[in-house]
Image 1 (cartoon, rainbow, N blue to C red):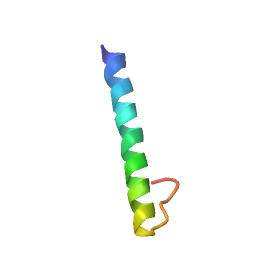
Image 2 (cartoon, rainbow, N blue to C red):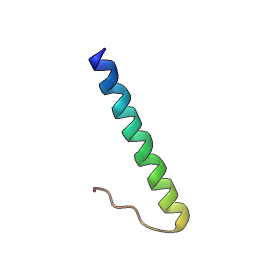
Image 3 (spheres, one colour):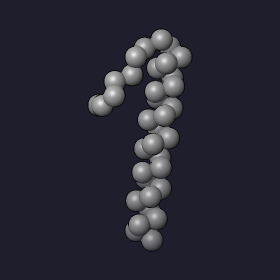
Image 4 (cartoon, helix red, strand yellow):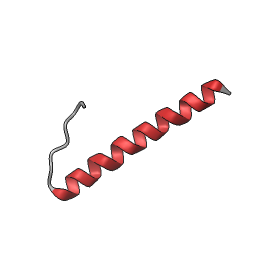
Length: 35
């Protein structure tokens, strides 16, 4: 159960990064590789 929660959180973080990056690209802003 705990491992599943961790996997879900990692997937959520990846999806968030992807979404933010694409949004910045659409706005013409270069996304930093690392925060």
